[in-house]
Image (cartoon, rainbow, N blue to C red; front, side):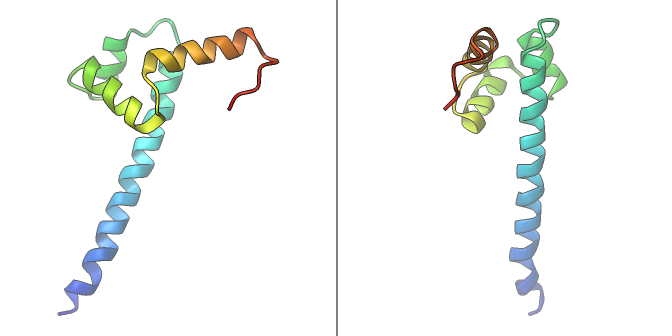
Length: 86
């Protein structure tokens, strides 16, 4: 049947869009994390998460670090501009 040919293509397109949206969401989260007016609870709500724990877990899966560690590293870079990032 012809439909069997299109299923992998459809799955690929859906997964690609999902990864793209996740990347955009991570960038938005990063900006919010660096803005002191936002709390973790506010960020979780804004991004559609039920809890801060789930947001933290997803952030770590996608970036390799917790939101707290990300903020610490960015603050360190801002205070020490000569230090090169990895």
